[in-house]
Length: 177
Image 1 (cartoon, rainbow, N blue to C red):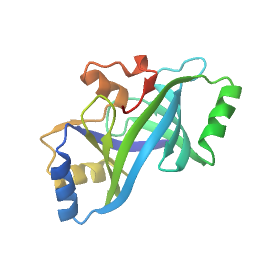
Image 2: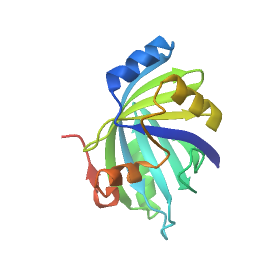
Image 3: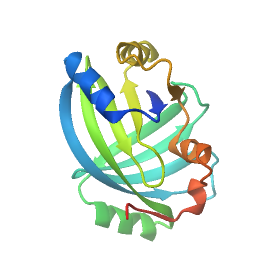
Image 4: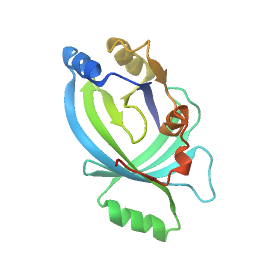
């Protein structure tokens, strides 16, 4: 499994972040609406799940494992699949029942090989996600964006929701209204 080096910056001023990205010469990759099914392993394996995601037409099937809340605490194994609905049906036939269906919106940027995502999820404020090939490149981009003084976390989205008093495990259908 591959280590995912990422962190989140909560409650960001989106216009301020966009302006800073442009000043730094970042390239806007695009905007995408995402839909995902989240499945638990059977039997349930704590801090691990299977995710089927359609993000702007690219469909991926991923196993996520969280070892700790650090910038390098998540491991993932991911493949591209050709069809969101058919893959969901295959997983159901294999005995996987989805725990949740979730939507989010993502505005993607790239700076020096680092992915910067402005993520919008239902019911919580917009946050920034920074992902790169190492902890040092992620921290470098955080510093360049002048966001070090903001609420920075490497917690997963479930824990981010908990910060706002919401239990993501209790929300089976998470969509924008």
